[in-house]
Image 1 (cartoon, rainbow, N blue to C red):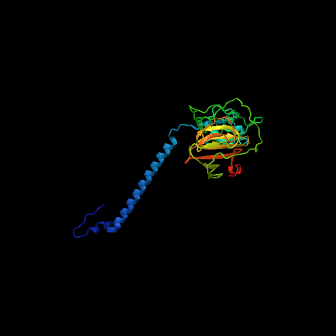
Image 2: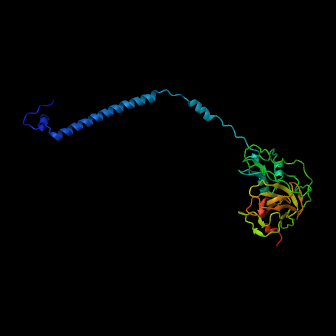
Image 3: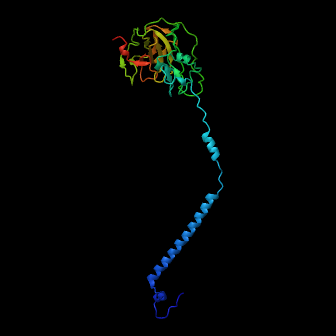
Length: 313
C-alpha cells in the first residue's frame, strides 16, 4: 500500500513504513522478480516435459520388428562362381585381373592365346571376366608346338585388339575364333637347343631391364627388315597389346617365344611357320617415340636378357 508524500518530505521517505530506503527497496524487488521468473520457468518446463513424455509414450508407431527380423535371418543367395573357380591357386592356372587380355595372358604365360582359348572352351575370346581362372599350361597329352606352311610374305592386316577383362558385350569386329583343327606338328627339337640370330642390323639403343625394359631396343630406319631370330610359329600378328604397336610373337617350342614390336608392316599371319632369318616385318614406330625394333625373348613366359642368347657382335 502506497502512502502519500507530505509537503517538505523527500520521496525517499515513501518507503519508510517498510523499514527500507531507496537502493535497498530496489534490491528486494529485484530478488522477488527473480524468484517469480524462476518459479514460472519451472512450471513451464514441467508442463513441456509432461507433454513430450505423453507424446513419446502414446504416439502410434508401426511395428516393423517382424519384417526386419525376417530379412536379417533370411539366408543370402550364394554368389555365382566364375568359370574355373575350383582351380584358383593351382599350378598352371591364372586368375584374370583388371585390364588383362588373352594376348597379354598368353605372352606372360609363353603360350598362344588361341591355345588358351581352346583349353578353357572360351566361346568369345573378346569377353573374359575379372576373377575368371584360366588354364595357361597345356593339359597332359597335348602336342607341342604346331605349325602351318608359309604361303606368302605379303603384308597382312593387323588384328583388332582383344577386349580387356570385363563384362562388356562382344565387339562387333571381334578377332576370329580359335580354330579347332589341329595342324600338323613341326619338327621337334630339344627345348634349349636353339641357335639365335639378331632380328635387326641397327645399333643397340637400350638394354634389358626387368622393370623398365623387358628386352632390347634396336635402332633402324622405317622399312628395315625385321628377321625371325629362330625357327618357330607365329602365334600372334596384330596390334592388340598396348605399348607394343604392330606386334609379332613367335613360339619356338614349349619353352621359348620371341616378340617383335613397333613394326610398320607385318608380313606373316598367325599359325604360319617361319625359318630363322626369314623377314617377318618391316621396322617402324607404331606406339613408339621413334623408329626402332623392340625385341624380347621369353623363357616360359618370363622375360630374359636377349644378350645372353644372341651371338656377340
